Length: 297
Image (cartoon, rainbow, N blue to C red; front, side):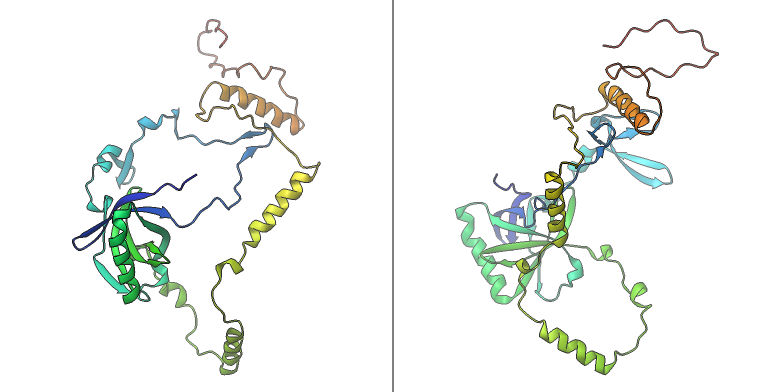
């Protein structure tokens, strides 16, 4: 499947605008992920958006709330947020250039590839790329995506351009309170020379593929061994389950799960069949005797 751009817009340098697309430079598909399973029932755990005293709510009824005082919220319609007009939603203008080594690594957040959208854009794209490379400069600008305006640095990367989002100054934690606890003494000269020798001995060119994710490798090995083992416990979740949740089937599933949990704990399970909905809580004694209820479908 072809990669989908995260952002589309114009890369602008003064009066020159270059149509570009932005793609994530990293991927998470290589990571092993797990899904939470309710062990007694063998069913996947789901999370619902709920309100105290009401229960599950529809996504269409949810608004953004800004707490301006303790427990006091302003309700903001998502459409009002979408209507905020920022030029950076469609344009990344390079407004300043700095030396490539001037930006502290603390500020770098996430890398993206910037790619020209068509052949007509390639000439101007190459000019910006080669100009940055020859001057050893990084272009700075701002871009809005996914509901946030990011500070961004644009630099050459092979045959293309790399955009790295940067943290704003107020997002960086001050290190002084942490480092100030370290005594301000000089290192022992003899030990320093030994350490410098070790560094010199292990100095080499950076090769990212020389480093392996040992945790993921061990995890894959564990999963492979568990897959081959006949003693590994297995469950079948059932692919036909509704992802929406909140329906009447949840009551049935919950009853079955509770009975299995009770049986596993050594208690006596109820003899009601799992295909019947759970009985409702009885009303207080003071209330009138309710009429007979119809069985749910």
